[in-house]
Image 1 (cartoon, helix red, strand yellow):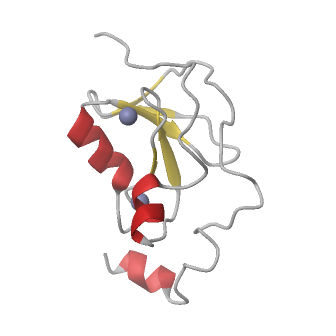
Image 2 (cartoon, rainbow, N blue to C red; image 1 turned 90 degrees about the vertical axis):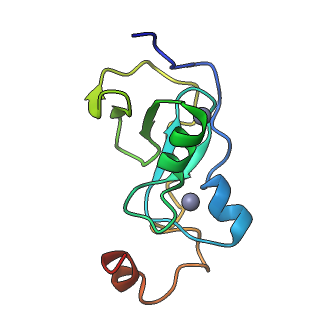
Image 3 (spheres, rainbow, N blue to C red; image 1 turned 30 degrees about the vertical axis):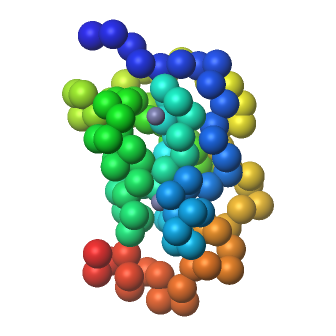
Length: 115
Ligand SMILES: [Zn+2]
Ligand SMILES: [Zn+2]
């Protein structure tokens, strides 16, 4: 299997690309290790990291959360060994979780559990 990890590519930004465009919000963030796309996790309403992987065939993501350093392969549906990536390795530590600040509804936990 060929690796699609491009360690030199910087992340696209500090938040989910699609959520930022649409005015949405996210729970946790994931980084595409091939093009740097930042998307929201499968526990977010948008699930844009998985949508991105499905629409591009970019198959490896890693966490974009502070303190997390795992990689995930959509090809094998398993965690995998990662490669050191271009910084930053996570969103700013003062960024709210969920985020972005000001767009997260008060009942966000209910919304995620009901999704
Ligand atoms: Zn999103
Ligand atoms: Zn990508």
